[in-house]
Image 1: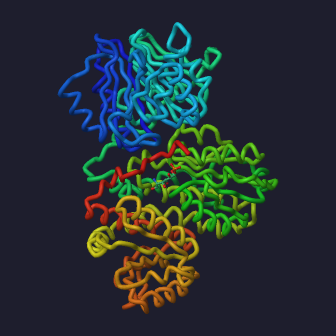
Image 2: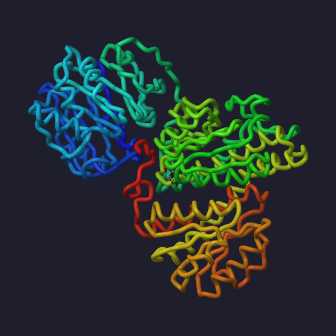
Image 3: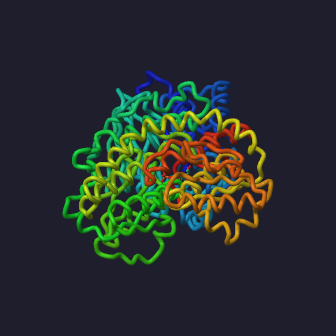
Length: 610
Ligand code: AGP
């Protein structure tokens, strides 16, 4: 999952500064190496290196690359180690073509062997380099014709931008499976993996579909298909502000996004609660009352944190709408032989809306005859555009690789979905009105929960050097235990596991000793007393206990070494509050360990490859 950007303009502005700034904004997509290519008076000049975009910027500032047209890339390595040599852009044998790519070429080995037999010399270990040699090898008097004929041989996913030394000012773009959009400026045109890279230049974007080829020149742009037929694509306006992708005084985007949650939860709820009727207004779902009544089963698909939100959603939807819900890892679901029951609704949860496994799981479900809806944060993303309907989170851009505000908004959106379906499946009005009232209180309760930060910072000092950690919870808070463990793993590199508290006795209890911090998520709900028994089992083996428990709960006394008290709310909604201290704990532990919180090693924000 790399980030690509391209720029061509009428010469009023230099391409390099625009590309470098854009790469810095795309760095959350991949950050192990970077590069750019500029059309200069001396032809195509490429500059690339291993490491962060900052290093590339210094290199270009030392040795500028003048020119008004260029392409650039920040990498998350899939094929070939993250070295300067393997960094993008890649060029052909005579350096007449330069190309950047996001995706995976699955038949690269076969293509490479054929191209080497045909006399091409490869310089790198990457799958991507085959594309530029293919273009070099392809017939055609224009770059777009060459690109189209080259792509006929390619199997895989790609978002690419290509330049030719023979056609100054032209950039050809192609999309198959990886997100790519165009930016339309005043006599200047952009291509990027997402809008954050170009927002400071234009709000007008064109989302490309799979199979599209776009041609950008200094005179304008057009989109064609593989038969060179012109395709009309809508120009959309990006609604969020640049400020949303600035740190605004915070040390890290993760810290900022955790702190934003009172507002982002409010934003997910805005205009969607109907208190009198005890209902949710979710027009984007495109589900008529008849459709809702006909739903017999719900399958939720997602990955990582989104999968955890799905697990919470199961509890909420089953309780509110009495509809059986199954939650699937998208990567497993997509390859399993689909046994679809009539009346199945598939819900694809994805912050980015671009996660390849979730997208393909959604496509597989649709192919098997199910209706699919998306629960997505990024407006205009592929899952959002391909689903039959959906719910936007409106949580604003999430830049920190470790997902935080999207998780709480995903759970709020799932509660709204449960409320939306509940009236068609018999939940009494009073219960629906009560839940609507409780939902509306959440922004304030989230704000109060964030006041725990000073306590959490102190707590983090106790655990920053722990080699392992165990997170335990029950019911709607078992997924919160999973999420807490994931956050710690992702950004502090401490090995952590989340488990259903009762499962601990069936194995993990063997890990318990005085060095093992055990985090219990114990809100006041129907399984609270069971969680307390599990705490006693850990205490009996000398484990160190952190308990996330509601205000005013006096009876943990000496059982827990540390207690973080969260405000009380409806048990079904408690996970939205109980996860926040866990987000903060992971954040402060990672800061204390000197980790790169927003760019954790080996990770990327949007996993657009399998
Ligand atoms: C979460 O912190 C991770 N970044 C990761 O697990 C993420 O949730 C997963 O890749 C799914 O992403 P999505 O919601 O954008 O589809």
